[in-house]
Length: 418
Ligand SMILES: [Zn+2]
Image (cartoon, rainbow, N blue to C red; front, side):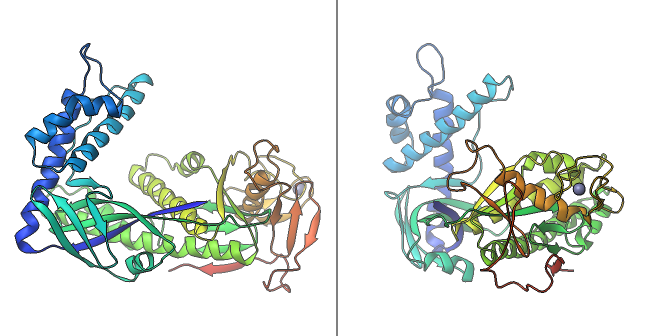
């Protein structure tokens, strides 16, 4: 499987060359906008084919800008991609205007950008510019890993920092982990995450709009002054970094857990359903934040898992919180929604509701019809703390997991932050 990451690298640009980069970005956007305005055939239809667009606009772009050839190609290509997605939206009945490019960024490829370990050279409207990187451990871990191939990059200008960044795309091939074991993960408000192997990840008050930053943000939201707006922006930024930091820790621990239990798959609930489940009344800010945090967590989990050959699969979570993971009895009265406690009114088993849901989510992947099961899962097994369950519910004790075997099904808590 292919692991692809985008690594943002701050650039140290010689003062006398900054204008060249600014002008290049400006002309790149002009070229993309020119393509949108002129990329029509004689009957007035938008051209969505790159070689036809090339014939239509390439020589105009070369005449009207100082961009080197391959930046012209990247500019019209970017415009065509944006037009395609706009047309796809139109076909679905959504009206929206044609795209317009004004973000301070430009797309580079291997002809216009040469990426070295600690520096790069970029083509501009005025020849090549050599830039040094300003990097930390995170960037180094990718740039110094020979297994990662550096593919391309996007030049960005960040106004708030008055700095240029190169977003370098790196890729490596990772062998898919062998095995049919699945870790079920329930993402929720109370614990943030609970696994089928019985670990409760405690995010404390850091997530889901309960933290200090969120309360400050809320109190500033209604004030309409300029200084309140500025403070609001700072607080939101700090809160975002704060939450992202916790999500990084959480996703890393979930992947570690999957590795400990020799799982080749992690099952999570499909995102759209998480959104519905977290819908708490009209609290729009909180909802937006939940959606954002879950999307981030889902993405981090996917790429961190992929680095170890583990695949993250979505399952439909319908009824996973009301179904008994032991006997399969489903009823809305099984779970007490105020305490989150699950008590099966068929077989009498009692568990934490989120733990029960985590097992059900994992089992959903294991019991998918064989045609819908991901490649390599075959006759899957759900990982529990003390053993595994197959799709028919047969239990086998672990013989390869170093986890504490004494506390068989007793959950453990892992604190991500307070
Ligand atoms: Zn039951």
